Length: 249
Image (cartoon, rainbow, N blue to C red; front, side, top):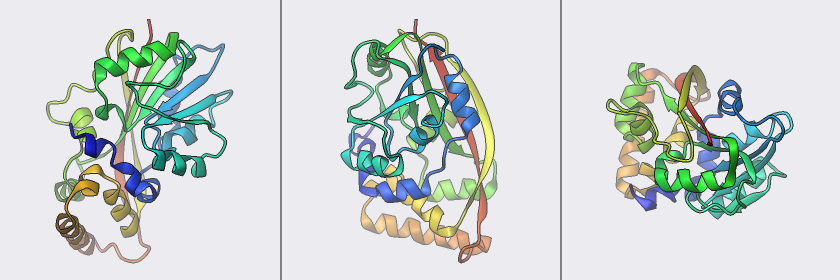
């Protein structure tokens, strides 16, 4: 998987923050249900601009820190979720002590990691009995216009891992145990501008040549014209949130 795509998001941090959806609270709460009750120290790994960090910070008694490889994304996170400590690092190389965390969570990020190495390193920082939680917001392509939108924008590594035709879901290895999963369906009202911001925050477009980005934008506008999406009018973009959790042995 391209390292350039994996670390490209800082260039579009503002569009990422504006265009990407939040995570449903119920899904985040489910990821944390198995976390030990005597402590609630949580690290958001690959935290980006803080979409998941924001929800975690509202969990009762939570002490949240954020880790991301991109300084530009962490700078955006400090603006959107002030007061949360931030550290530069990756799932394979965490800047935290052994057994210092009760839960490690990754939103829209596990498809960028090497799962064996990441499981081992996160197993180092998560205490015994702690939780690894993974979560993705994936557009529901059972809706025809959404499927056409993906055809224009190209599918992402996340969509292929979590919801692809041959997907078996994310691989989580030792020292974490059995993987549990749940899903939630919901809609996000989106304007034409927000849909373009969402597209511009995707690694494929960020790293594509300028002429290809322009052609994708043109095709998106043609689709939105067909849908009658003008001005500040909105259309419901259906999402399926997929969450996974595993307890550390």
